[in-house]
Structure formats: structure tokens, C-alpha cells
Length: 231
Image (cartoon, one colour):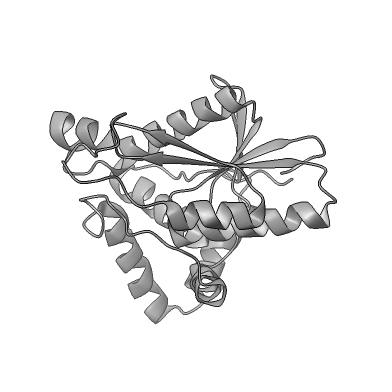
């Protein structure tokens, strides 16, 4: 996923997943003897004045800025009007898919502006499986995101280094490292189709405790649908 000379941007949301990825890649950079550069990028749901579209103040990112300073990773913030677009203009009941697409596009554009050739996102194992279930149930197709994807419009490669990592390990490391996690500002948080899939997956694993491992193995082995290419 990462090669010598790469300029890698880490998409930081303020959640436990992205902060752990930032720490992990910072450590990995030292192990690789600094043969690639690292940049943290973060989008906020605010306008250029610094106020969010719902009238609240922008989130306090000082703790994340301090973490980036500690890791010697530069942080770039970009204010967006995602809140206004999703919740005031479109008023979608299930905005997650559009939000994810817009955020990924904005992050890729920011990568291009900063000269980064790769964008690292912090999706873990459960994210991949929940996306698979959503595609199957709501779209009638077998699909999930790939560990590595070339974005032709922005000329950026999206990588997901934690895609095989169980979420329980992320939760454990969040406590171990005392990561400065921000509260999720999204009004739809906890009331989405993804949350339904998370609960469905949990119910499935009550009956079949190794269910997540089996589903992940299926993704890695599948040749007919080509969900995940073997690298």
C-alpha cells in the first residue's frame, strides 16, 4: 500500500479509528526509516467564518493538533458546508452514502492541493462487512470498498491499512493510547442504516461467533465477484 517516496495523507475525522491510524502510520514511518512523508488532513462541518451551519461553534481540535505536533505530522484543516448541504438543502433521511462520497471527494481534492499521492482512510473490518450487508440488502448487489483504490479524477490512490483489523482492537488501543477522540457532530449519528447493519452483524455473531472472520475470509477468497483483489 505504501511505497518509498509516497506522500501519504491521513484522513482524520476525530474518531477513534482515524486517530489510531494516524498513530500507527507515524510509527510505521519510523520503522521504514522515513522513506515516505505523512500529512494529516481534516474536514469540519463549518463555513469559512468558523461557525458551523447549524449555528454551533466549530469543534475544538486543539487536542488533535497537539497529537499531530507530538507525532511530528503536519495537520491541515479545511472547513466545509457539508451540514448545510446534507441537512438543510437536501434533507436526506439517510445521508450517509452521499456524505461519504462527498467527504472522500473533498479529501482527494485536498490531497491533490497538498501534493499527496495517497489518501489513507481508517476503515476497519466491521466497516467493510457492514458496507457489504448494506449493498446486499438495500442495493441488491454484492459489493464493498477495496483495500486499495485508484481515483482517476483526482489522481490519488485511496488505501485502507486497517481493513483487516477488528474494531475491538481499535477500541482497546484507543484506551491504551488515551486518544483525544472528538464527539461525532453528525445529527444522524446512531440513527443510520449503517447502525442497523452493525446491530444485524452483532445479532448474526451471537449465533455464529466466528461469523465476522468467515465473512472476511470470503471477501479475500472471492474470485467470481472480484471484491478484493489478491495483492
